[in-house]
Length: 111
Image (cartoon, rainbow, N blue to C red; front, side):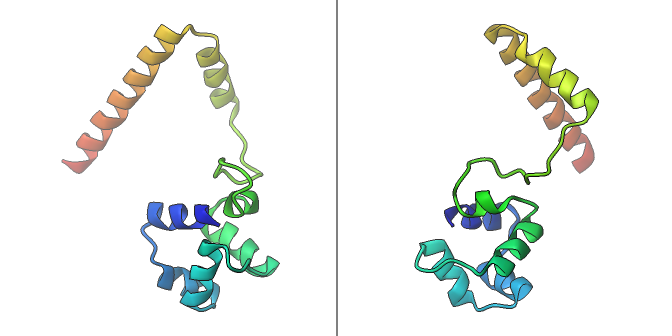
């Protein structure tokens, strides 16, 4: 359950706060992460809900943190298909533009 540690860090959650959310001990969380024990199914499902991810991701069975029921909108599917049809040079341009646009929007928000 090494992905649990990644999720906690990404969400700025401490092991103590996760333990409180789940109603279990911090020691149990530490043992899950170290692989010494695995959580009960009810705890695993609660974790997936808290972190909005799949149980497979929590169990390190996939590198995809998105929940199993994750779906793209019609516009997102079209955008993805258009991106996939580009050559590598144009993909790099689109990626750079998207990053620059996000950076600009974040700066605008912070000011």
